[in-house]
Image (cartoon, rainbow, N blue to C red; front, side):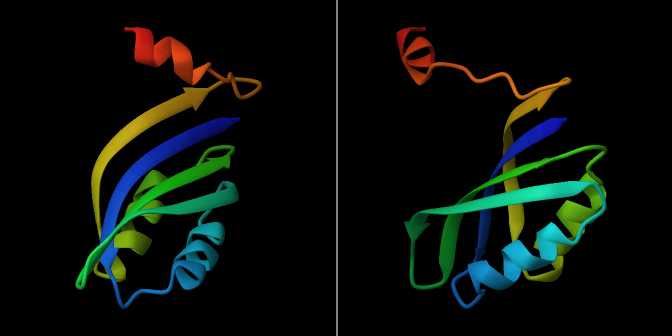
Length: 94
């Protein structure tokens, strides 16, 4: 299992539902969660969490770029037999 957390900017005209549907069809993707973190007249800031096995990262990137978006950073990657959760408080203490 793999989880990838992406910080993404997309044009504000893009439907997050459409984006989630398209990402959900990428090879290896089993689940998609999109959270809007910032809104602007022209740009939406998103945190996109993708889970699955053997996720086609280039396919994910292609979907985002085809809709006019850009991946600003890969903020987290978890790989293993199960998803290892981290207490957010531990990150704040560092």
